[in-house]
Amino acid sequence: MKPYPRPLAASLKAALRDTPVVCLLGPRQSGKTTLARMLAPRYAYITFDDAATLAFAEADPTGFVDALPPQVILDEIQRVPALLRTLKLAVDRDRRPGRFVLTGSANLLLLPDLGDSLAGRMEVVQLHPLTAAEHARAKGRFLAALLRGRVRTSIAPSAPQSANDLAERVVAGGFPEVLARSPIRARSWHRAYLRTLLERDVRDVARVRDTAAVGRLLELLALRTGELLNVTSLGNELGLRRETVEHYLAVCERLYLVRRLQPWHRNQASRLIKAPKVHLLDSGLASTLTGVTASDWTTQRDRFGHLVESFVVQQLVAQAGWTDPDVRFWHYRDKDQVEVDLVITRGRQTWGVEVKSSVTASRTDGQGLRRLAEQCGADYRGGVVLYAGSIAFPLDDKRNFAVPLARLWET
Image (cartoon, rainbow, N blue to C red; front, side):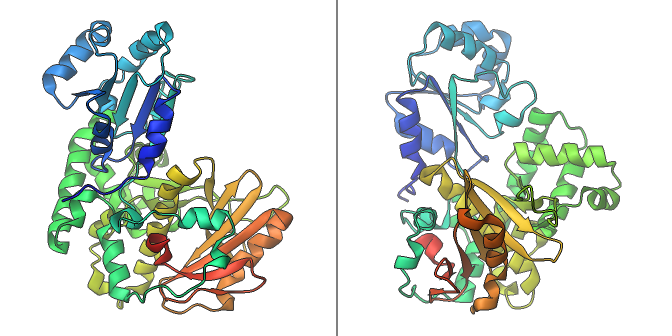
């Protein structure tokens, strides 16, 4: 099958033109190696999944680095973290751009003592599982349209989407290996994927002995994806101390399994909820952990609503990688229970995104966006209610629109 287009390739190549080390990070099986090897034959390829290579690098980091070709891809760098300090010394001797491409299935920036090893010498490019736009071989420009205020100028109807089509996209998620499989085979792949992470990567990255407890935590988080994070409640259900749950959460974040979405607030806004929201990064993985299938769309509406929210968050965070890496993502909720699922900021400029799994939308669905606009004042740039219908239309003052979810992969 023809490889899926990865718009992030342009960001990777741009970074290599002026930075000595470029680190391509993302979940295991998200396509990092495939993307990095597009640089061949200019770049040699070495993987630390090879036992002999790993042993050489661990035993003699300096000798290993001295023996490397002038331009090289080092795959799965998190398996030999001591090598980063040796690479730092090599770069200090020769700061030519584009010398090293590192790939990692753990977020090196969150690993203790390693986040600053290559500070000022390395640029990080984050690769996510395939977005719905990449799967559809589309450009993935919805976020760009939102940030530029162009949603309002493109309100023609989308092609009608069945609820089952949306459900299937959400349940499949974005790992390339899953998308060519039947739903049953996809769930088998997800389970094998999790076993690999728990048996190997959790031990490599965090030295966690009780990996089964991490697995149980993931199951609970899948059931609570899109909800406010309550660490005390999780600890009570798992029979673990709060500090242990926090540690396991950090491990899940390092391995790109979980995302904590921090609350947005202005200093003067004293009635805001300060708890973060938790999202499983891949909605397909969350669906497998909760046992939800596409056929459950009509019977488990609340569960699907949260899965769709996590799906949308992931689409827009991924699109930011090739649209504007400087944007930041939050959630909003106040003590009146008024909320916005996703708040996007660039400096003080602010946008809001609400997510609905229903096929209808109305002006009342923009309540959270209007409250956010009140908090932001002149910094509010607009917002959308993404819903499962096919018609885009303004909700109020032409800053907020109801927009079909299909625009995420059509635009």
